[in-house]
Image 1: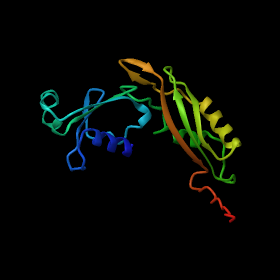
Image 2: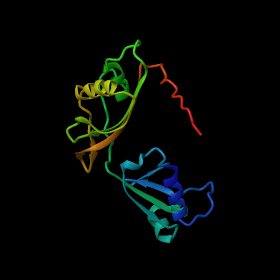
Image 3: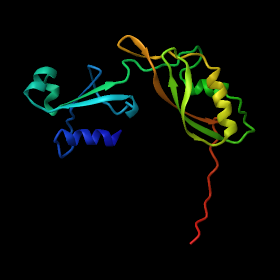
Image 4: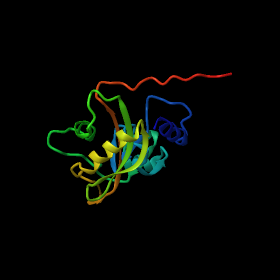
Length: 180
C-alpha cells in the first residue's frame, strides 16, 4: 500500500514528500487516510491536480490535489455472531486443534458471496493439509456473514484470514543448510 501511495504522490507532481497530503475521497466521502484500504478493495483511482477546479469542487483541502478512490463496495462484509468480535476468534474456537498438537498456520482469501456465505477463494499459505482440512470444515459450518454492500445491493467481496493454532504457540524455526 505504501508503494501505491508513493506512486500516487509522484503522479500528482510532488517530487518531495511534504507534511501536506492530497485530499483523499473514498466512495464520495472525504477521509483522513487510505493506508488501511487493501489494494484488492480498490476498483478505480482518479487523481485530480491541485488547481482551481479541484479547489472549487472539494474546498481548500484540495490545495495539494485530490485522490478519488472507488471501492468495490460501500460497506465491507462483516462477521457478526454473538460472542465473537471477529472471524479469526470464531475459527480459533471452532477448529478442532488442541494444545498437544504442533503449531500450524493458514492464510486464506475468503470470498463472501452476496448471500453471506464464505468459501475459500485462495490458499495463500498452509503449514499442513490436516490443519487446512479442519479450517475448511469450520468455514463450511460457520454462520453467514453480513455481505458487502454497494449501491444498496449485497455484493461479493474478498476477506483475508490468518489463523495460527494453538494460540500462544509459535511455528518451529526452519533450519536450512547452504552448500557451496
